[in-house]
Amino acid sequence: MQLKRLEIKGFKSFADKTVLDFTGGITAVVGPNGSGKSNIIEAIRWVMGEQSARTLRGGRMHDVIFAGSDSRKPINIAEVTLVLDNEDDFLPIDFEEVSVTRRINRNGDSDYFINRESCRLKDIVDLFMDSGLGKESFSIISQGQVEAIFNSKAEDRRAIFEEAAGVLKYKKQKEKAERK
Ligand code: ATP
Ligand code: MG
Image (cartoon, rainbow, N blue to C red; front, top):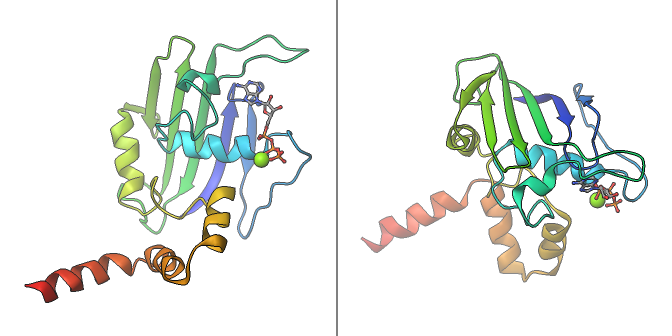
């Protein structure tokens, strides 16, 4: 599974349609403070089903819509599409390429699509949850999380690594079995 493309339109600082093509290997996004690097990560979180406006540094969900700038009027709709390569069947869906789209307007009305077919937010959340790419996973590590790892006690740090490696659930199962 690999990120192929991210299309952002009307989301946060991206008033115009912006397309990021991810080729193989590592992609780094660099730019001055305030240029929109974090907004790109937030677009990915959002399209994957983020439900907390606070995590996206907003008060209400429709705060993600481009609010205007000195030179541009506000926009009324934000739309993000994430295209993933699924040739290895990593995602539990029978398509070699999967696109996920989320759209919101100023009334707060939202639309969700998987492969351009209308769906529910839950369908998107479920699609990623089973894959380990969901909300509670380590697929996106925020600045705060890095500090938490550095500042934590050795045992707590170990738990973080065990969870990231997927060992924790087996440890829990083992403890449960031993108690019986
Ligand atoms: P840093 O290097 O400081 O972390 P960054 O590149 O991560 O910066 P972002 O936080 O992604 O920058 O972008 C911040 C910019 O996005 C600010 O200029 C802010 O005004 C703009 N912005 C955020 N939300 C909106 C919105 N809804 N409408 C228009 N602009 C927005
Ligand atoms: Mg940032």
